[in-house]
Length: 74
Image (cartoon, rainbow, N blue to C red; front, top):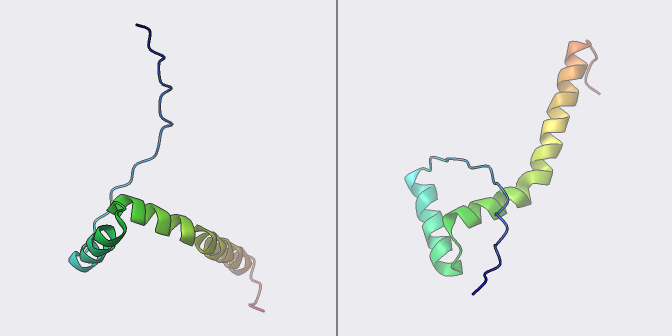
């Protein structure tokens, strides 16, 4: 019997997060209702928030450059 080897799963970066009891409880509740793991919920929430986070980071970087160059805020 011949088996086809399965390709290795792509590597994923891992992140450890400490949660307050309240946040953990909320995630437990969402997980029970949706059937999605807490890690899945956090991953989805982070992906949803990324465009806004990137925009904020870019805005902060731009403002930092302006301050370093002595430009007043518009």
